[in-house]
Image (tube, rainbow, N blue to C red; front, side, top):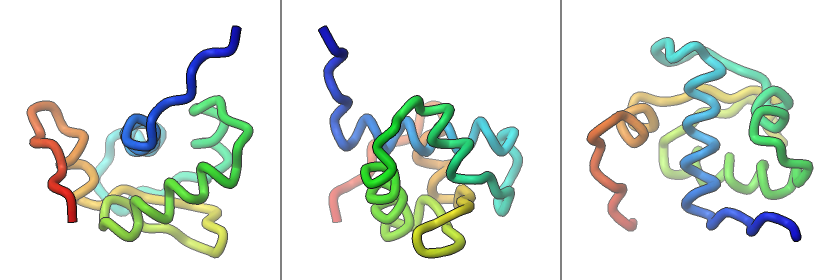
Length: 92
């Protein structure tokens, strides 16, 4: 039986954490390739990854280079969101 798909919120959280880990938890702007993020997340669904990146960029949690994005970096707000003890984001 296949594992259940993560919710959109879980996927976004995993995306942000993965980008932060791949950039060595260094301060922004430290960029990483989307292909590396996709491999670490273990997903083959490039469309879902691109959509999640667009949401994170629109909310100010990531910055992206290219369309579709080829490289991404965390923002200070994105780091605050996933930092231990961070408050859950408020709906916009």
